[in-house]
Every structure is written in C-alpha cells, then in structure tokens.
Length: 299
Image (cartoon, rainbow, N blue to C red; front, side):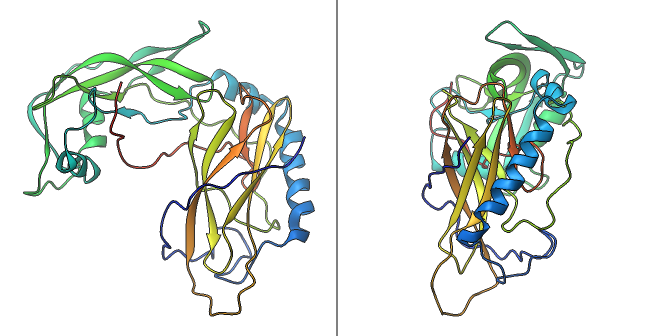
C-alpha cells in the first residue's frame, strides 16, 4: 500500500461554490489541508478499505454494470464543425422524424471475458430527451431524423463492455450518434458512512479510467487560497481508495469565498482490474459523471 498522486492542468476556472455543507464542519475559505493531515487521510483510507474488502457491497459492485466512460458517442469522424459541436453542448437538438414507439424491456451487457448481465433498457424517446434540451432556440442545431436499436462499446468499472444502444440518425451525417440504452445497476449500500472529521473535500466525479487500468482521472475541489488539489491513493487487493485534499499556499492576500475544480490523474501501481474505486470522504464508489462534450473523433 502507498500514497501517490500526479496533477494535471486545472480543469475549470473558479466557480462560486461555498464549501459549507460539502463536508460537515467546513467553512468557506476557512480550512486548509496541511502536511500534518496526512496521517488522518491515511487512517480514513485504511478504514474504508478494510470494511469494503470482502464485503457484500464489493461483491455486488464486481457483478454489476457501472459506467466509467461516456455513454454517448458522436458519429464516426466526429461532429462536422464548431456550430454542430456547440449545438450538442447546448442540447440544441430537434426531432424531425419518428422514433420507435415499442421499446425492448431488457438487453445484454457483455464483457470481453465472456461475462454478461441482463439490464433494463431506456426507451428511444427517453434516450432522446437526455440529448435534447426542453427549449430549442433559433441558434444552430442538430436534427434527429430517426433511431434504431443497435449496440456500442462503453467503458465500465469492469472494463469495456458491449451494450444495447440507440443509434440516432442525424441530418447531414452518414453514421449515427449513439446513446447507450442499458441502465446501470443500482449502487450497493456502502458498509461505512461518510467522514465527519477528515480535512479536505469529497471528490466531485470520476472522469475516466485509462484503457490499461494503470491510471484514473477524477475531478477534485480545492480552495481559492491554496495551491491546488492533491489526491492520495491507497491500494489493496480488493480496492483503491482516493483521498482528496488541498495543497497549502503561503499567501497572506485576501481569500475569496470560492472553490475551484481541478482535474487530477492518479497513477496506480497495478491495473485497477475489478477492484472497487472508492472515495475516502464518502466511503462510496467514485461515480462517473463525465464532462459534458463530445471529442472530435468517434468510433
């Protein structure tokens, strides 16, 4: 076991988030993670790992379907131009055709090793509403002309999986925009409660797990008066526990009541595999939320 983390470039500009309420007992701009907090984080990480390793919750996690990557894939080659990419970002998508009225109830999720799981499916209309906003203006937009059920590959906590997906045809595109239809499993009840007296703040989200499983990228919170977020990692045979904290800054200037979100990549000693990725503060699996947007290349 060890604690090691690497930092990437900052993800977002400062946002007007007050820390109050994120962790009990923390106040806006009043708390900094110090070097002396290292033992507290390490103790909490060990507690989380000990109760999860071999637990019923861990067994459920390893047999479930949990996303670890984007559930939407762009047409092959990506969206054509900045206007189309902006339309997607703004959910400026209109329907000029018919969607299937009859939806299959269940479908298989299949992993490369041959394991499979039957999951309920989101219908075509429900899937479309996750892509399109409720108010579409006169700005540039994408036009959906139809959809059919197919399949796509998605990243999951158990590695890449093939899942049923709705293939939406877009006006002006030869290949479809894909949206995973399989509904993820319900998170297992954690065997430990959230921390009440550990410095720092909960991880905001999981962004991605590297294809080789040797690194994970998360978004962490840190204060406007510190020198960035750091994420420590404790590895066991059954879990990987991440602890987020602030890097202290020696600055006597005024501290504004703001938080910053920072993307942090954590290197692992060995591939994540089927180990449970946990947040030390919450005692729960670090959930994928992704980052709104479509890359310029598709599959």
